[in-house]
Length: 265
Image (cartoon, rainbow, N blue to C red; front, top):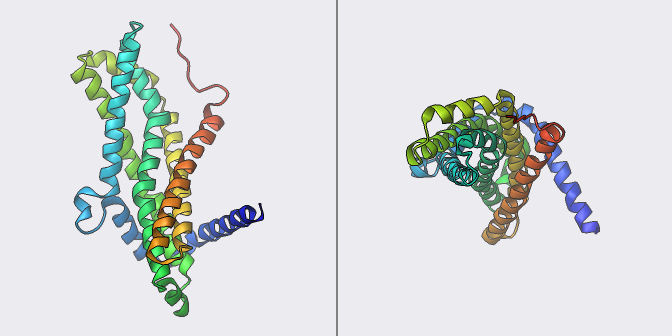
């Protein structure tokens, strides 16, 4: 029990230090932050073509949006209201699918990469070398990555939402042959602008949670290359739980009472 409480305290102290380091990262390490934003979004080296976060998140949400349309059209068709597939896409994509799928993509790309990078630096004693040169490692290594992740998530999530919308429309109109006018009518009727804004806020909180968790495990990795692998696995597991938890808490806070939605005939 004491070990668990000690671990929670270490997490809390590190997260507080990381959040406090963001202003210093913004003012003193702007070049490093910009470099990390480019690396996070598009990847680096040969991975820039197929491994950038923008590609991974885009494809994940693209196929998720298509799956929602397929399931929605088939399920609603069983009760004769397949015309409401546009409503289904506008409702599920914004509130559940796009945020959760984007969070999973962030954990598997940005998060895992940050843990591996920091863990490799820790076991190679590069972080200790920074401290010996009077460079504060938390602002330079952690603050810049947290800030870059929160900045990069905005255009990445915009792409994710657009991809899910396009995939849902394509599957419904082109594959199933529903009238484009019917789909667009119900989609635009039930797409609430405030839901999109809350969805972006949810994505930013997810990015913050993912980056804090992954940088903690990478910064405190130990045990050589094997320890780095263990740290990445633990970080991904914890960040996936955090993604779902953020979705639950924000959904309860925003839609827990009224739901911000009314369907009537």
